Image 1 (cartoon, rainbow, N blue to C red):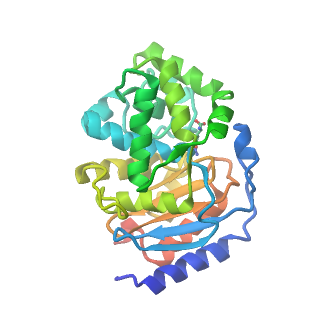
Image 2: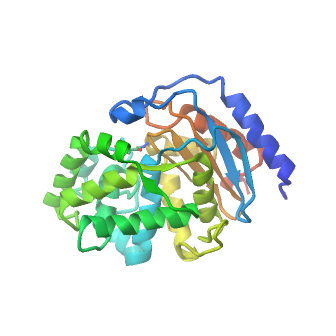
Length: 311
Ligand code: DON
Protein backbone atom coordinates (compact mmCIF):
# COMPACT_ATOMS: atom_id res chain seq x y z
CA UNK A 1 0.00 0.00 0.00
CA UNK A 2 1.37 3.43 -0.97
CA UNK A 3 1.06 5.75 2.01
CA UNK A 4 0.01 9.29 1.15
CA UNK A 5 1.35 12.25 3.17
CA UNK A 6 -2.22 12.92 4.38
CA UNK A 7 -2.59 9.34 5.60
CA UNK A 8 0.71 9.47 7.50
CA UNK A 9 -0.02 12.87 9.11
CA UNK A 10 -3.49 11.72 10.13
CA UNK A 11 -1.99 8.63 11.80
CA UNK A 12 0.58 10.76 13.65
CA UNK A 13 -2.10 13.18 14.86
CA UNK A 14 -4.42 10.37 15.95
CA UNK A 15 -1.57 8.49 17.68
CA UNK A 16 -0.72 11.63 19.65
CA UNK A 17 -4.26 12.49 20.66
CA UNK A 18 -5.28 8.91 21.50
CA UNK A 19 -2.13 8.18 23.56
CA UNK A 20 -1.94 11.52 25.39
CA UNK A 21 -4.56 10.65 28.06
CA UNK A 22 -2.50 7.63 29.13
CA UNK A 23 -0.88 8.92 32.31
CA UNK A 24 0.53 5.57 33.47
CA UNK A 25 4.17 5.02 34.40
CA UNK A 26 6.77 7.20 36.08
CA UNK A 27 9.93 9.04 35.06
CA UNK A 28 13.15 7.10 35.62
CA UNK A 29 14.59 8.27 38.94
CA UNK A 30 17.84 6.33 39.30
CA UNK A 31 19.45 9.08 37.20
CA UNK A 32 18.52 12.31 39.07
CA UNK A 33 18.27 14.46 35.93
CA UNK A 34 15.63 12.20 34.38
CA UNK A 35 13.35 12.53 37.40
CA UNK A 36 13.25 16.30 36.84
CA UNK A 37 12.02 16.25 33.20
CA UNK A 38 8.36 17.39 32.90
CA UNK A 39 6.30 14.20 32.65
CA UNK A 40 3.60 15.74 30.47
CA UNK A 41 5.91 16.33 27.48
CA UNK A 42 4.86 14.19 24.53
CA UNK A 43 6.06 14.26 20.96
CA UNK A 44 5.50 11.96 17.98
CA UNK A 45 7.29 12.13 14.63
CA UNK A 46 7.54 10.06 11.47
CA UNK A 47 10.12 10.45 8.73
CA UNK A 48 10.28 8.67 5.40
CA UNK A 49 13.59 7.89 3.64
CA UNK A 50 12.89 10.72 1.17
CA UNK A 51 13.09 13.16 4.10
CA UNK A 52 9.41 14.02 4.61
CA UNK A 53 8.65 14.78 8.25
CA UNK A 54 5.29 14.35 10.00
CA UNK A 55 4.94 15.46 13.60
CA UNK A 56 2.66 16.22 16.52
CA UNK A 57 3.24 17.60 20.02
CA UNK A 58 6.57 18.42 21.69
CA UNK A 59 8.85 17.23 18.90
CA UNK A 60 11.46 19.98 19.44
CA UNK A 61 12.08 19.30 23.12
CA UNK A 62 15.64 17.97 23.62
CA UNK A 63 15.91 14.96 25.93
CA UNK A 64 18.52 12.39 26.94
CA UNK A 65 19.05 9.76 24.24
CA UNK A 66 20.01 7.10 26.82
CA UNK A 67 19.90 3.52 25.55
CA UNK A 68 18.81 4.48 22.06
CA UNK A 69 22.46 5.50 21.62
CA UNK A 70 23.40 1.81 21.80
CA UNK A 71 22.12 1.28 18.25
CA UNK A 72 24.36 3.96 16.77
CA UNK A 73 27.53 2.83 18.54
CA UNK A 74 26.71 -0.71 17.46
CA UNK A 75 26.48 0.63 13.90
CA UNK A 76 29.89 2.25 14.29
CA UNK A 77 31.53 -0.88 15.68
CA UNK A 78 29.89 -3.13 13.10
CA UNK A 79 31.40 -0.87 10.44
CA UNK A 80 34.79 -0.93 12.19
CA UNK A 81 35.22 -4.63 12.98
CA UNK A 82 32.45 -6.41 11.05
CA UNK A 83 29.28 -8.18 12.09
CA UNK A 84 30.95 -11.54 12.72
CA UNK A 85 33.45 -10.04 15.16
CA UNK A 86 30.54 -8.38 17.02
CA UNK A 87 28.88 -11.79 17.26
CA UNK A 88 32.03 -13.48 18.54
CA UNK A 89 33.17 -10.82 20.99
CA UNK A 90 29.87 -9.52 22.39
CA UNK A 91 27.11 -11.83 21.18
CA UNK A 92 23.88 -11.15 19.30
CA UNK A 93 21.20 -12.98 21.29
CA UNK A 94 18.62 -11.64 23.76
CA UNK A 95 19.39 -12.17 27.45
CA UNK A 96 15.77 -12.42 28.60
CA UNK A 97 16.80 -10.38 31.64
CA UNK A 98 16.64 -6.66 32.56
CA UNK A 99 18.88 -4.21 30.71
CA UNK A 100 21.36 -3.82 33.57
CA UNK A 101 21.37 -7.45 34.68
CA UNK A 102 24.51 -8.78 36.32
CA UNK A 103 23.00 -12.25 36.48
CA UNK A 104 22.88 -12.37 32.67
CA UNK A 105 26.66 -12.00 32.64
CA UNK A 106 27.13 -14.60 35.37
CA UNK A 107 24.99 -17.09 33.47
CA UNK A 108 27.10 -16.82 30.30
CA UNK A 109 30.69 -16.71 31.57
CA UNK A 110 30.86 -12.95 31.25
CA UNK A 111 29.75 -12.80 27.61
CA UNK A 112 27.12 -10.04 27.37
CA UNK A 113 25.13 -11.82 24.59
CA UNK A 114 23.38 -8.66 23.37
CA UNK A 115 24.94 -5.33 22.26
CA UNK A 116 21.74 -3.57 23.38
CA UNK A 117 21.89 -4.37 27.09
CA UNK A 118 24.22 -2.33 29.29
CA UNK A 119 26.95 -4.99 29.53
CA UNK A 120 26.99 -5.50 25.77
CA UNK A 121 26.87 -1.80 25.06
CA UNK A 122 29.84 -1.18 27.36
CA UNK A 123 31.71 -3.99 25.58
CA UNK A 124 30.77 -2.44 22.23
CA UNK A 125 32.17 0.94 23.36
CA UNK A 126 35.38 -0.83 24.42
CA UNK A 127 35.79 -1.93 20.79
CA UNK A 128 35.92 1.66 19.50
CA UNK A 129 39.63 2.25 18.98
CA UNK A 130 41.25 5.48 20.09
CA UNK A 131 44.31 6.63 22.00
CA UNK A 132 42.18 8.21 24.71
CA UNK A 133 38.63 8.30 26.04
CA UNK A 134 38.14 11.60 24.21
CA UNK A 135 39.32 10.13 20.89
CA UNK A 136 36.93 7.21 21.27
CA UNK A 137 34.12 9.55 22.33
CA UNK A 138 34.68 11.79 19.28
CA UNK A 139 33.97 8.84 16.97
CA UNK A 140 30.77 7.93 18.80
CA UNK A 141 29.49 11.50 18.86
CA UNK A 142 30.31 11.86 15.17
CA UNK A 143 28.27 8.73 14.43
CA UNK A 144 25.26 10.05 16.37
CA UNK A 145 25.57 13.32 14.43
CA UNK A 146 25.82 11.58 11.08
CA UNK A 147 22.66 9.61 11.86
CA UNK A 148 20.86 12.78 12.98
CA UNK A 149 22.11 14.89 10.05
CA UNK A 150 23.16 17.68 12.40
CA UNK A 151 25.73 18.13 15.18
CA UNK A 152 24.57 16.29 18.30
CA UNK A 153 25.98 17.55 21.60
CA UNK A 154 26.65 16.17 25.05
CA UNK A 155 24.62 17.64 27.89
CA UNK A 156 27.09 18.39 30.68
CA UNK A 157 24.21 18.41 33.15
CA UNK A 158 22.97 14.94 32.18
CA UNK A 159 26.49 13.55 31.93
CA UNK A 160 27.31 14.87 35.39
CA UNK A 161 24.10 13.36 36.75
CA UNK A 162 24.94 9.97 35.24
CA UNK A 163 28.69 9.90 35.91
CA UNK A 164 28.11 10.51 39.63
CA UNK A 165 25.50 7.74 39.95
CA UNK A 166 26.65 5.01 37.51
CA UNK A 167 28.08 2.62 40.11
CA UNK A 168 26.10 -0.35 38.80
CA UNK A 169 27.49 0.13 35.30
CA UNK A 170 31.01 0.46 36.71
CA UNK A 171 30.51 -2.90 38.43
CA UNK A 172 29.42 -4.35 35.08
CA UNK A 173 32.58 -2.89 33.50
CA UNK A 174 34.80 -4.65 36.04
CA UNK A 175 32.90 -7.94 35.60
CA UNK A 176 33.46 -7.72 31.85
CA UNK A 177 37.12 -7.02 32.50
CA UNK A 178 37.48 -10.06 34.76
CA UNK A 179 35.86 -12.25 32.08
CA UNK A 180 38.06 -10.90 29.28
CA UNK A 181 35.09 -9.38 27.44
CA UNK A 182 36.02 -5.71 27.88
CA UNK A 183 38.43 -4.70 25.14
CA UNK A 184 39.73 -1.43 26.62
CA UNK A 185 40.21 -0.12 30.13
CA UNK A 186 36.82 -0.87 31.72
CA UNK A 187 36.41 2.50 33.44
CA UNK A 188 37.22 4.26 30.19
CA UNK A 189 34.56 2.17 28.45
CA UNK A 190 31.98 2.98 31.15
CA UNK A 191 32.92 6.68 31.04
CA UNK A 192 32.41 6.85 27.27
CA UNK A 193 29.27 4.69 27.44
CA UNK A 194 27.85 7.11 30.02
CA UNK A 195 28.64 10.05 27.73
CA UNK A 196 26.92 8.38 24.78
CA UNK A 197 23.75 8.10 26.89
CA UNK A 198 23.98 11.78 27.87
CA UNK A 199 23.54 13.50 24.52
CA UNK A 200 20.46 15.56 23.73
CA UNK A 201 18.12 14.67 20.89
CA UNK A 202 14.64 15.77 19.89
CA UNK A 203 11.87 13.51 18.67
CA UNK A 204 12.53 14.91 15.20
CA UNK A 205 16.22 13.94 15.50
CA UNK A 206 15.19 10.41 16.44
CA UNK A 207 12.92 10.24 13.41
CA UNK A 208 15.83 11.25 11.14
CA UNK A 209 18.10 8.71 12.81
CA UNK A 210 15.48 6.02 12.33
CA UNK A 211 14.81 7.05 8.74
CA UNK A 212 18.53 6.54 8.09
CA UNK A 213 18.08 2.95 9.23
CA UNK A 214 14.86 2.62 7.22
CA UNK A 215 16.58 3.97 4.11
CA UNK A 216 19.46 1.51 3.82
CA UNK A 217 21.90 3.61 5.84
CA UNK A 218 21.50 6.84 3.84
CA UNK A 219 20.61 9.91 5.90
CA UNK A 220 17.44 11.45 4.40
CA UNK A 221 18.53 14.99 5.25
CA UNK A 222 22.21 15.02 4.26
CA UNK A 223 21.87 12.24 1.64
CA UNK A 224 25.18 10.86 2.97
CA UNK A 225 25.71 7.15 3.54
CA UNK A 226 26.20 6.63 7.27
CA UNK A 227 26.34 2.85 7.49
CA UNK A 228 26.65 0.12 4.86
CA UNK A 229 23.31 -1.22 3.69
CA UNK A 230 24.65 -4.73 4.36
CA UNK A 231 24.89 -3.94 8.07
CA UNK A 232 21.32 -2.63 8.45
CA UNK A 233 19.73 -6.10 8.88
CA UNK A 234 22.14 -6.84 11.74
CA UNK A 235 21.13 -3.61 13.52
CA UNK A 236 17.42 -4.08 12.96
CA UNK A 237 17.48 -7.71 14.05
CA UNK A 238 19.17 -6.69 17.31
CA UNK A 239 16.51 -4.03 17.81
CA UNK A 240 13.83 -6.66 17.24
CA UNK A 241 15.34 -9.08 19.73
CA UNK A 242 16.39 -6.74 22.54
CA UNK A 243 15.39 -3.16 21.69
CA UNK A 244 12.62 -3.00 24.29
CA UNK A 245 14.46 -5.28 26.70
CA UNK A 246 12.29 -7.95 28.32
CA UNK A 247 9.27 -6.55 26.49
CA UNK A 248 10.87 -7.13 23.06
CA UNK A 249 9.04 -10.40 22.46
CA UNK A 250 5.64 -8.92 23.28
CA UNK A 251 6.50 -5.91 21.12
CA UNK A 252 7.35 -8.14 18.14
CA UNK A 253 4.14 -10.11 18.70
CA UNK A 254 1.91 -7.05 18.96
CA UNK A 255 3.61 -4.39 16.81
CA UNK A 256 6.03 -6.27 14.58
CA UNK A 257 8.68 -3.59 14.09
CA UNK A 258 12.30 -3.30 15.24
CA UNK A 259 12.36 -0.76 18.06
CA UNK A 260 14.65 0.81 20.62
CA UNK A 261 13.77 2.62 23.80
CA UNK A 262 15.67 4.72 26.32
CA UNK A 263 15.01 5.57 29.95
CA UNK A 264 14.90 9.24 28.95
CA UNK A 265 11.46 8.46 27.46
CA UNK A 266 12.46 8.19 23.82
CA UNK A 267 11.44 5.32 21.57
CA UNK A 268 12.21 4.61 17.93
CA UNK A 269 10.76 2.03 15.54
CA UNK A 270 11.79 1.27 11.98
CA UNK A 271 9.72 -0.03 9.09
CA UNK A 272 12.51 -1.00 6.65
CA UNK A 273 12.26 0.78 3.31
CA UNK A 274 9.18 2.69 4.45
CA UNK A 275 9.64 5.03 7.41
CA UNK A 276 10.72 5.55 11.00
CA UNK A 277 8.45 6.36 13.93
CA UNK A 278 9.83 8.27 16.94
CA UNK A 279 8.12 9.25 20.16
CA UNK A 280 9.07 10.87 23.43
CA UNK A 281 7.24 10.84 26.75
CA UNK A 282 9.19 10.48 30.03
CA UNK A 283 6.94 8.18 32.14
CA UNK A 284 8.16 4.58 31.84
CA UNK A 285 6.64 1.21 32.58
CA UNK A 286 8.36 -1.27 34.91
CA UNK A 287 10.58 -2.62 32.12
CA UNK A 288 11.92 0.87 31.32
CA UNK A 289 9.96 1.70 28.15
CA UNK A 290 7.93 4.90 27.61
CA UNK A 291 4.24 4.22 28.23
CA UNK A 292 2.83 6.84 25.87
CA UNK A 293 5.69 6.33 23.42
CA UNK A 294 4.92 2.64 23.00
CA UNK A 295 1.22 3.38 22.60
CA UNK A 296 1.83 6.03 19.94
CA UNK A 297 4.27 3.91 17.93
CA UNK A 298 1.97 0.88 18.13
CA UNK A 299 -0.95 3.02 16.95
CA UNK A 300 0.91 4.28 13.89
CA UNK A 301 2.29 0.85 13.02
CA UNK A 302 -1.23 -0.57 13.06
CA UNK A 303 -2.90 2.36 11.29
CA UNK A 304 -0.36 2.25 8.45
CA UNK A 305 -0.16 -1.55 8.22
CA UNK A 306 3.56 -1.67 8.98
CA UNK A 307 3.84 -4.98 10.86
CA UNK A 308 6.82 -6.70 9.20
CA UNK A 309 5.39 -10.13 9.78
CA UNK A 310 2.18 -9.17 8.04
CA UNK A 311 3.72 -8.08 4.77
O1 DON B 1 23.06 2.87 31.57
C1 DON B 1 21.98 3.28 31.96
O2 DON B 1 21.39 2.77 32.88
C2 DON B 1 21.34 4.45 31.23
N1 DON B 1 22.32 5.44 30.90
C3 DON B 1 20.63 4.00 30.00
C4 DON B 1 19.67 2.86 30.23
C5 DON B 1 18.52 2.82 29.30
O3 DON B 1 18.15 3.77 28.65
C6 DON B 1 17.75 1.56 29.29
N2 DON B 1 16.53 1.76 28.55
N3 DON B 1 15.47 1.50 28.53
